Length: 430
Image (tube, rainbow, N blue to C red; front, side):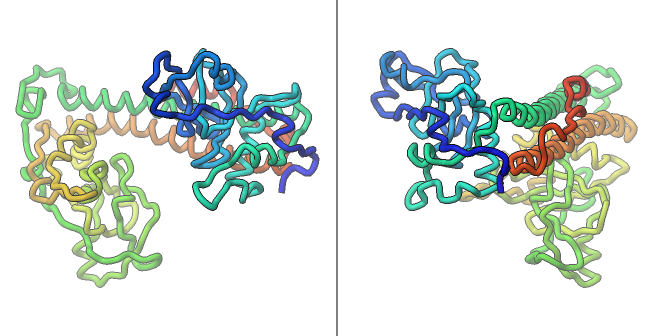
């Protein structure tokens, strides 16, 4: 169902649809290369210029193969229909043949409105199912694209809908940037805390790098009370106890998501029940994921699967939260992966190798706790921004559907909480 008050017209009556340049060996090897966009650069309502390829295009051909600010780009393949508006941030930019360039041929067309309509049509409403060629590689040909019936409300209404949705997208971007800034701060602070501490002590050089003079280099074996492999039991949709798997690790924390369950007798439960402060170490996975460590906070009863190792430490010597933060430093994760035995598509670090990992240990629990407190405060900010971002994602999806179906009008919306002052505050508190 779409907004019943809108007029509809074929997309080809509103836009001139141009074809991009086909990449070839000649174009790749030629001179006077020009940057061009691929489908991978075109996300929903976003142009990603992180990686932009180049090819040789003659000045004559470039007349028809270049972009202007306001051009609507639509993916022919991949996630067909995915669309974004080119903003002209690069003076000369071309596009590949797997993208369609739509340039308005009427004054009463706002390309941004059609980005959002296409997003709703392809991802929510399903009204263009079958528009792509499904017999070979899924694609959306020029003729099929031109024939798609799309709404054509008055331009002021197009603009108001697009502006409302863009306001939510801008707030999402603010929280993404704030999260990124907080993560960079966390990494910088971790580096400082684990090499300088908090007491202003002179440093000493050690085999694992600089650290305060009163600190010691110890191994996990020195502080470990237990390193235990998890249960080799297949989980199921329902059961007595959640069995935590590698997907339950999230940035150093155990999270309860996509759970599977197991039924256990009392003795098995007693042997594998997790305790608050246990660390779960991902011992086998792809090399990107092996070595990840997360702390269990004891919010509910749970056991753990066989590809995880439970690491319990002597808390009189080492606080588990302190070790967890150290284990999750990017540099330490890189070092840990070097311990892995590798097979095709898999890597493995056993408990014996885990026990050899060395780390800097302050002599007092109080200094360890102060370091944890600093990092907890930064983590709290990161979680807050991610939670707000998730809420904004839900808001955007809801508004997109309701505005395109006529369930709600822009005049009924109150987006004052997404004012520039509010988003600037989010950035300032990152």
